[in-house]
Length: 223
Image (cartoon, rainbow, N blue to C red; front, side, top):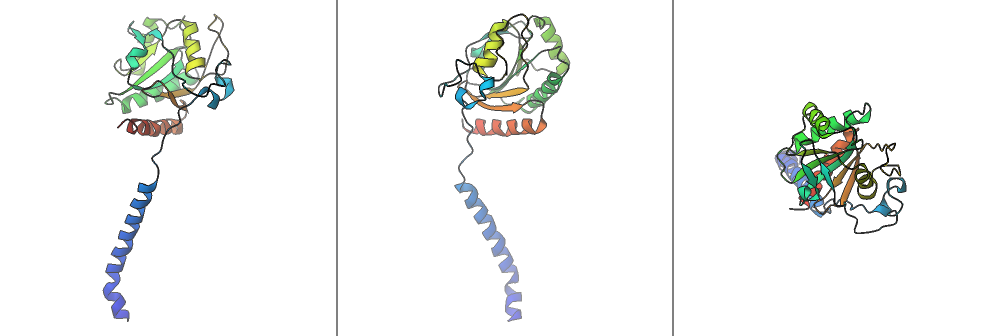
């Protein structure tokens, strides 16, 4: 009897591992593919959304915009047509969270450098200070690639409305007046249809890793 089991021991081990692999493959095949939510205003913390939109349940899109980038070029929604992009809000003189966010965005830029369908967009929340020249200096210091990443300035009211009404990213009702200041650590993932697909803490490396994972899921959804 012992000799019988000894003779077929190797066969049994191989069969066991082969069965385990087959079960694993079947399990993965049966798992539904991960899908990202399409965020509507009624799904987001009410503090982050303009009061006029808080109960909106569908059809939310990033509004049209016209802003100026670090090269003095007018950037509109057409420059992001059929693109996935990551947006945030910053200012060049920020001494606290912005340097961390910019570094993390630069790390993302490096990872998507060869991804033609993915771009980055950073909005200045102090456009009266962040002139084109200042943005250009900041871009050069932070390693911004002009082909992948726009730092934009422009009409303050428009930027603030984008933050509240489109990106649903800030906890203030600022109207873009001279003494307003919005500040948020959020990175926002936007799909090719200009829909919000995720929010991430731009100062947290674990959140950046989650963003990159979700980015892969979103890319795959267009394949």
